[in-house]
Length: 223
Ligand SMILES: [Zn+2]
Image 1 (tube, protein in one colour):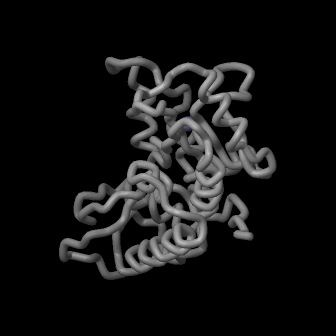
Image 2: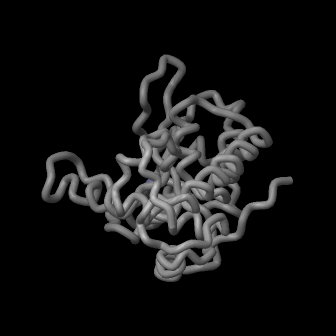
Image 3: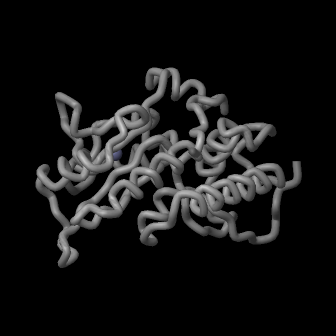
């Protein structure tokens, strides 16, 4: 294991960052995701070494080829799509494609969150100021495994729409019930902006497999 001492620009959850700014938790999170993708075989040790670096490069290359095949979108959407698992990226791009003729603008405004970010978000509206935005603690949200995204809908003047109606219309156009689940269909605590991948695994199984770096979803086949 070689630890990279030199400052390096790396991709982490869709963002370009200096690798020295990543915490142990950040790196561990990324290693788990990369291992589950079959791109990383080394230890889940939270250290950004050469194998993590190589896996991150391979992950980027796969992300770029998905973008080339399935289309590119606005910057904010792009950053969030790239934070997803490869299966998530493939589904999210196809989802955005289906919205290309929709008369409202849809952007993906949220993608993957680390456990730490999830816990921080959970505290919003509880121990911290703000409105409650999530009911899930770390490891209890599909966002924590690269399998979920949230959208925002805007009208032609760029105004952010918050009514359920516009989100229902977007879901009608963009849902693929074979591969996706829409939060607007939850009977309790409806979550209109939320989409997640369908999977054969229960949430607890996904969490268990993710933490061991085991595959927990089928890599989407591009047709
Ligand atoms: Zn969500």
